[in-house]
Amino acid sequence: MLAPKKVKHRKWQRGDKIRGKASRMTKLSFGDYGLKSLNAGWITARQIESARRTIVGHIQRIGDVYIRLFPDKPITAKGNEMPMGKGKGAVDHYVAPVKPGTIMFEMKGVEEKVAKRALQLAGYKLPVKTKFITKKLV
Image (cartoon, rainbow, N blue to C red; front, side, top):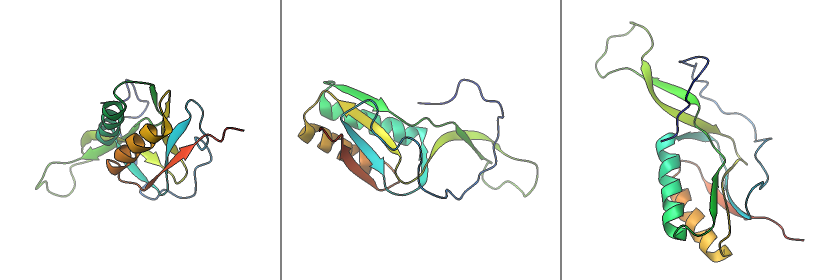
């Protein structure tokens, strides 16, 4: 699964509210088709990997898949039935905060019908609403 090799700060503050719309990663850069988020949320490394495997399995390794997210935000957790206090828990997993309008996955080298179904199946694995988008060929 995806996780940073090295981080400047091991533990971060949560910052639960994700406000505003995405201003970066809003246009297709690498592929012809993409999966765009329609609302905000945290996407875990496990969810990204699950969606990636769904896409690769559906397109049968024809074409290219680009993951535009990287989970670099550490989320900590303490054990069950721990008393209050005693500090912050250990890092449990990593998430990628996503704003509305962020392109999460891109594809190229496959037919539009196959790409649409693959990205639709991947969208079911994610905790945010998603939309299939295509590059406008002029």
